[in-house]
Image (cartoon, rainbow, N blue to C red; front, side, top):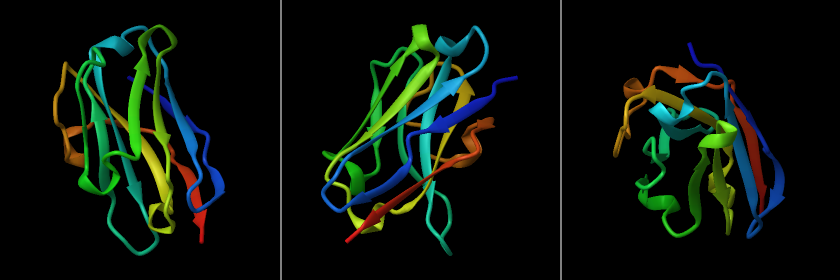
Length: 125
């Protein structure tokens, strides 16, 4: 069982930056691929990006490419989502997710087994 706890959300002006963190419990974090998803009010949860277990491979949805970066520190059981040049349309609850295995290009929510509780990101115009 893996427990995930996100932090780092908040209110930021358009053009600003935030870094989200997701800390995982357990001693096998390096065996899990990690993903970030978001859900805006009235919309379905959508894929943001993913990183494989080693951290060597990342993949992003087109709307965040060049603005968001996912990284991980396996020694700290933590995955990060650095968000730059934020836009009002990035406003959502952001969730991290985990699935055991090397993983690569996992973009669908049903491919992940564990989820955090989410952290709110609000971008004002």
